[in-house]
Image 1 (tube, rainbow, N blue to C red):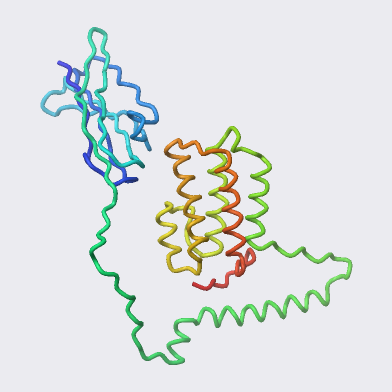
Image 2 (spheres, rainbow, N blue to C red; image 1 turned 60 degrees about the horizontal axis):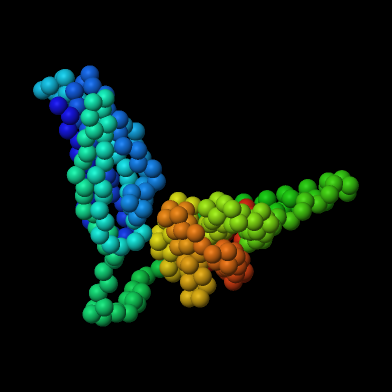
Length: 293
């Protein structure tokens, strides 16, 4: 006896969240069945983020029966109520179909009736020189080591042969990022490979943000990046330009958005503008001094 079904872990998710769709077939162990082919989206609206390998399990009470499961991690960036269609399984003799499912993607509710409160003022605590030393001893030791190192370098430079060339100064992070953006612009990927264009564009920005603001941007989502940058010294206009760029990049990479050519050019300009407006205190590569918060 063959039985097929489909189900989701959650029938409703907030926009951009994820859940798992299970497509399941219950068959006799000696029988074979062909699963439906589901590619990168369902009904054109629900995006497949990850497709797991087929998983087979057996009934402890009936070893002649087995259950085969295909799991899909799904998401959506558009709110609404969607119908997950029925899926058809084929056997040598007959086809079997699952029931359709209703799935809802909701927006994040905002309570506009609640008041906005000021941030609490910092508390005054006793803090003496010894406390400061305990908190910063590694900087003191590091400074002494650095002074000794500088003295050693000066001594070496004075004693080394005059013919040795001086090492070229390292470029600051913002200059490295701008050079990469210019190289990306010259490749003109946005004409035919828009997704690859936005992947490389955001990689450059994430690397710059990591070096400039000391946050793990490569390992964070767009929302997590902005949470990390919440208290950084970035004006509202510059912050909005960065957010527009990263959100559009997410839509291109995960929702198959196809921006107009002028939007692709604007994304490059926004990236360059963000770096130029925040580059003032960008450190040199290899400098371990902590940046201002």
